[in-house]
Image 1 (tube, rainbow, N blue to C red):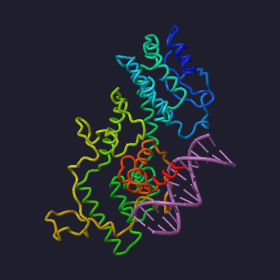
Image 2: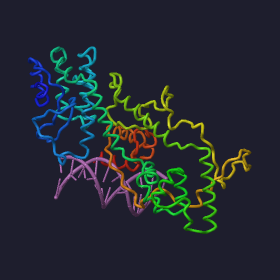
Image 3: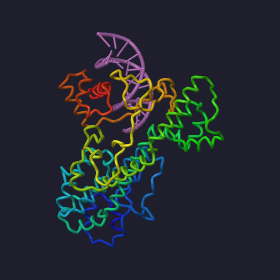
Image 4: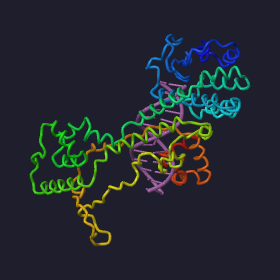
Length: 413
DNA sequence: TGTAGGGCTAGTT
DNA sequence: AACTAGCCCTACA
């Protein structure tokens, strides 16, 4: 009962209720946004939503496209901070450090907008609850019951990761692979000429190529559509190269996929394996994983884990284009399989790039970028955007000198 | 090639 | 609809 009502009360009400006798705890409940805002956010642990919610769920049309990510970020941040506070040996110290005024880390994130998604009435209310519980053992017991479920906190983090992961979308490599060997392969192969298909066979592997061309109702090798001496020469070279490749290189896709799955699983585990030390090092602005961002140590040697995709492959062999110039003018004594030069033809599994460059998605400037730009103008002078940019590559990630100029123009308005 | 100025676009109020 | 921040185009040195 108290849990169900707690989040809908003002901080003052919450403090009052925390000091009153506590009815049996029904378990984690859904945390709704205010009625006026009209959207729902899940802040408290919520394995199962209450059957009769005081507020109706928000209609999809009421939620902006960014709302799921923002809600997930807010829920994860608060769930982790709250769990850390209630699970700490010294509740008062932990709650003070995280939610106390004025310097609590979670409090600052809420009040200073370091994380915009956290700036909400609900987040304020949670921070106030923890602050009010300092020195109040009864309130601490209530909060431990509400936020002490580690699995629920981990679930909020997993949800955030899932949202962020989904937002990344497919890479161009994945899209290309999908067209060549995935569900879209049939149409891709149907539209390809014989020379291009020969390339596809190299990429897809003999077995998969047979499957795809079998579905096309054709056989391998298909009769040359283009029958010229040059095409025959290229075809022969490709067949030879293909045979050489298959004789020395294993299909890397299964191992690569397994390694990628393990890396992903390790990152998920790492993300939920939070502790107070990690929270205290959270940046408050510009959470961009740039070159100077805190390393995840993914490149460090790992015991008992699969090899990184970037590790040296002991089965790799060097091939040489047949018309590649010798640096020293002499042929290597080591025999290397010869491949036809890729410069002779200009086909690609990728769709031709759009001539019109796509507009970059607008990315808001963070406080660190603005401050660095101010100092850069002081140091290098107004108009020397290139100098400012090249001397702060870790801050201006993805920015152009032109962007700095535009931003400075906006800041001067 | 780097910069300035004007215009365009998407998001917000 | 008006406003704004961020991005892009084009001219110029």
